Image (tube, rainbow, N blue to C red):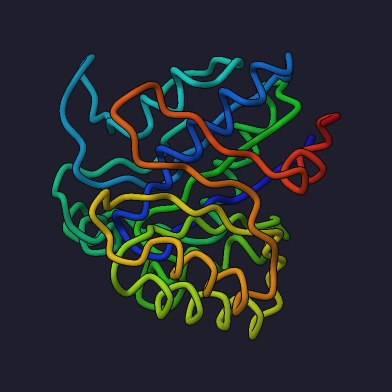
Amino acid sequence: MKQFFITGTDTDAGKTHVTSLLLKLLAQHKKRAIGFKPIASGCEMAFEQLVNADALILMESATVSAKYDIINPFAFAPPIAPHIAAEQASINITVEKLSKAYQHVKQQGADYLLTEGAGGWALPINNKEYLYDWVKAEQLPVILVVGMKLGCINHALLTAAHMQSIGVNCIGWIANQVDSTMDEYQANLDSLKTHLSFPLLAISPYTEQTPKLQIYKTLLEKLSINP
């Protein structure tokens, strides 16, 4: 099984959008793929349980189905930082509990498992641990989604520097154009390509039409898909 962790430069970088497109890309190549959204806040009641819109999108985009609780084991109603929502609900999220939940997803028979993070890279899950601690413990290759907007260079470089400092393997980044009116979009893109040490894997352009990734060969190689 090939496993990847998709993180973002901040909360609205477009992790769900990009993860969904990656799942659909794998589906086009007849791959058995599943998405995992371990932690989600801002959930609503449906089907007599709390569900998250992002997790539902991943489920719809996947080619391997599973029960909602397996795809999103930690769901919270308040649209706030997950560790604060968990504390209010008297739930303790830990790296160990995330790994146990991850085992259930790995047992669903997929060839590809794409895990979408929550918020940005440095997301606390309790008062001592961060979501990246779990990513490191599971030794997951990371794909960084850069939300292309003012400030993205700073956010991307700080995130990349921290990944490198703790020894996480970031295999590349995806530019997601979240702001259609961004000034000097191409100049910012070129600057990121110069300053980030890992490769640009794909571009997700801002569009009102059916979203589609502009894919680079490196992404196909990382996913073991013949170009």
